Amino acid sequence: MSSARRRSVLVVAAVALFGGVAVARRGPAVTTRPPLPMSHKRHVEKDMKCRACHQGVEGEAMASFPTLADCMDCHKTPQGQEPTEPEVRALAAHRQEVSWVRRNRLAGHVYFSHAAHVTLAHMKCEDCHRDMRTMDRALTEPDVHQDMDACVACHRAKHASLDCLACHK
Ligand code: HEC
Ligand code: HEC
Ligand code: HEC
Ligand code: HEC
Ligand code: HEC
Image: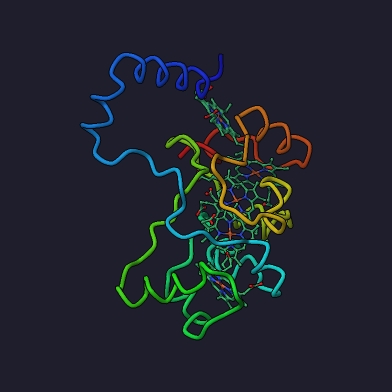
């Protein structure tokens, strides 16, 4: 059994045993809905580049998420006709930053770098993620499914590092 699978079995068991109590103690339950619905498809169709909103993706380990100030570059004036669009200005008016929900998160002992793959290895986002250019809703679960075997298989094929300490820091 993989560790991720082992973990999910444990989580299921824990929820079955302590369900209500655990949720009550941990405060708000896990957010299932994005704080502001935003269509990737509509924005990419307007020629926006991925890096406009994920600014770390070419030069840093983390791709990062946009701030509301990034959105307000355009949304300070109304854009399009969608009924959710005015929500951007409403949040900005309340100086309320959006806490985007991050779905992909490798185990804490694993080091991953977007810059290494996107810039050095010239990989496309869709080589690992699902095609966000066609998505008009947020992810509800992780879209990158790479355990150690998958990372190592590609590293071996492409003659990239197989050093334990490259991926475990
Ligand atoms: C207008 C800004 C914007 C653009 C342009 C944009 N994104 Fe995003 N992206 C976001 C926001 C906001 C989120 C988080 C909420 C959501 O998914 O709606 C997100 C989430 C993601 C996630 C989910 C990450 C996770 O682990 O939760 C992926 C993957 C992603 N974007 C890839 C892309 C790719 C690939 C492109 C270019 C084809 C792109 N994005 C263009 C704003 C943008
Ligand atoms: C480069 C300009 C630009 C930026 C930056 C931008 N948007 Fe937009 N946005 C648009 C345009 C243009 C439309 C209208 C598209 C349409 O209706 O087809 C739009 C539409 C929307 C809508 C309504 C339709 C939908 O996508 O669901 C929402 C909500 C939205 N944007 C949220 C955001 C958020 C949140 C950010 C920051 C993460 C952001 N936008 C950044 C240009 C931009
Ligand atoms: C080699 C595979 C790979 C490629 C290529 C890749 N990603 Fe990722 N992405 C991942 C993994 C793995 C994670 C989870 C990283 C972690 O937990 O440290 C992730 C996480 C993310 C996240 C959420 C967390 C963060 O890093 O801020 C966003 C947003 C994202 N990717 C966007 C993109 C975009 C945009 C591109 C293309 C420009 C891209 N990714 C290319 C594998 C990839
Ligand atoms: C489809 C192929 C592919 C996949 C999948 C992939 N990688 Fe890579 N990775 C590469 C390539 C190619 C490089 C070498 C980039 C360069 O230096 O030119 C690299 C480089 C790296 C580096 C930098 C290594 C160094 O020398 O410092 C790290 C860290 C890394 N990958 C971690 C991961 C992790 C963790 C995963 C799984 C979540 C993963 N990679 C999945 C192809 C891949
Ligand atoms: C290319 C990246 C990469 C390399 C190289 C790599 N690992 Fe990993 N390793 C991972 C990832 C990603 C995970 C997390 C898998 C998961 O959470 O499902 C992991 C998980 C682990 C775990 C936790 C147990 C498990 O199965 O999840 C151990 C222990 C481990 N690696 C040891 C090593 C050792 C020892 C080496 C060198 C021989 C090594 N790794 C090389 C990416 C790598």
